[in-house]
Length: 330
Image (cartoon, one colour):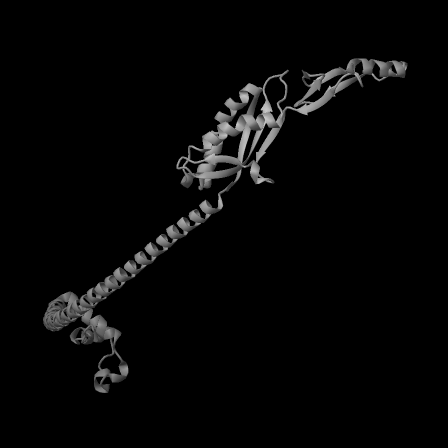
């Protein structure tokens, strides 16, 4: 009857009905449903008023939780506590030509497996974000198994939060408060013990330091005394050594001076002796005469004697008989 009605409408429209025949385009990551048949992405024939035509995405999301608490995923933990999880499951179709499932079908397929998976955890681990997030990562396996009958697979599972019943929430808060108080009491006890130990250690260290300082002072005084005595002894020995070396130097200087004076006297005597021996010969007399003539001053000659020295022979005999005193070298 439905098909007959559509043909009647096409007949009334006449030629305009054939003009309305068009090509429908299905985008990527989408499906087209035409009269109950699933069409993959691409171009497909579509006749208005004849074909039922719907375009649906290949992916979808199921949200357990807000805005309604009734949609929270009910989970019974391994230690028999009822809690509600708020999470989002993203899924997509596997393989072309498969009919996209509805949200109700996906939710019905996932509720039981996910509840059983998270129910393996005790309440303490459910309350820990790290454990809960790891459980969400591991939940993709059970979700894929549950969605396989719908030709779909889970892309990701994201945890949003946890909702506890009022009585359980009060009990958990009380337990956490007691645990925190216990930790605080333990910290206070440890701090008091540490302060006591620190005070005792400081007292022991102070006594030890005092004893060491006294010992060091005593040792310092002893060393100073020993060093002072050694210094006096060394100074006395040094003075005696200096005096001894100075006396030895003065004696050596006097001895060397006497030896030098004796040597000079001997050299002068030897010189005079050799000079006298040299002057006693013929050559010595000539040398004496020459020196006398060279040093002769006429004004010093006796006038009486000068009247007799009138010839060169007389002057020669005069100078040969005269001895010239040769000055001694300094």
